[in-house]
Length: 545
Ligand code: GLN
Figure 1: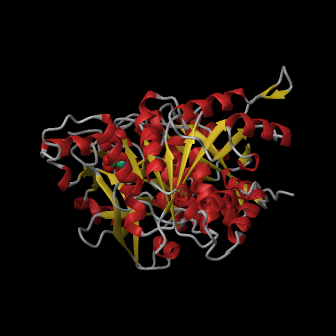
Figure 2: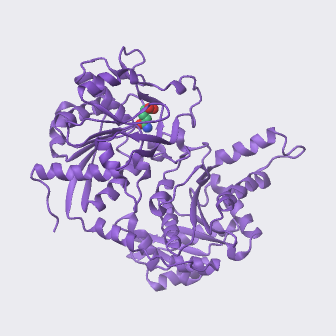
Figure 3: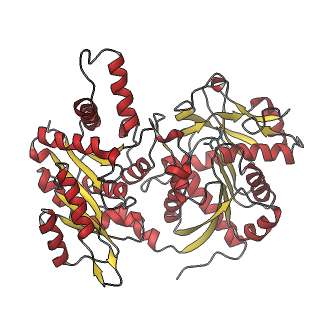
């Protein structure tokens, strides 16, 4: 079997240039050549994983099937490649040090001084290869987080330098992504920041093989040549990543720029098949030419940072495209929701989603939003905390349990309809201790959930500590809220719905984590469809010419 080929993606000049999207796009293009590909991300921060970070710091925490709390870029990898990721796809400085320090305590380095070089860099290199070795992949793409020049990225760049020195030349390439800004006053595209960034990378011993220059304006041939000459990169390997309308355009733009061909030439890789990108193009075409549009209210407490709900907004895009419908998202801060603001904003919404979250802030606003959706029969979808809030709202306003609450917010409530899971009661450590990852859910026949999934057993991903309190189940079902999805192993309520409502769905799990371009998540697909029907019934489903 041929050895795994390695592609490294680093970034310079500024963060947020879209290394994750470039890595995912190249992965997609190589996959279309019949190659097996995985993408992994190495993050320079010291947290073991982003699970303990506030979403305002780092955006959404993406959870994998095996229960790893990871960087949101892994979501892009899954959405683009349609291949599940796992803990092995996301490594942080914290994880590397933790492993080295544990080995030191076990006496693995007895007699030696443990140092960044070689111990930390060896551990990083070992992790570079883990995925490829384990799965016998054709290509592993490694994205290195942060920017070249950051102090904390240094050990990763040094590990990459050594890794290149140790391996045959055609087994590894380095791609560097930079910014080529357009200076309006000078009327010019400027290459100097790119030159400096490449210089810094070269000083660390890594000469990039391919340069990807992100720009607002097309970079003409002479400027590409100039970049190539100053940065010591072949001109045909200077690739322009022009700002795109949607991230889903990027694989097609990179194909036009021949990024896949250049990478394959350098790595001496032959295509195994040519599957074309028709389904992807189909999706992009539908996305760009919707026939109708609706507005969905996304009620959450981190709405100022859209990245905090990345997988949800991407799921809307996938579900919208398949429904040939543009989904406009109205970001609604749950903190300051009052009856007044609700009566101003909500009548214009065609569907309402109440987002996941933690703690008490914003909960009262979420409860008000849910009451509105339930009473006005607006299509509604509550995820995780959103589902728990639907249960509390129903308990308070339908069952008449006015003090009903989740014990996350009120330890002393006499009606804890949402309660801490038994297995969580002795948990004191914060990192990685929630109920995490994929669990089975048995779907009850004759329910909305069953109509959506079209099957009896599904598996979805979780991230929570609290659950529906089954002591109340009978009372809820009698009053019209049905538990239509149950974990077969422990009886935990996974889905609630109200049959006497056009679309009212709450899930304890996070279905948004499994929506991909080629397999849009079915709850989202039906939710958007219900939003279209609602808009139509209210005579506002505009046809887009
Ligand atoms: N805070 C709630 C819990 O821990 C919900 C979590 C979430 O929305 N992801 O159960």
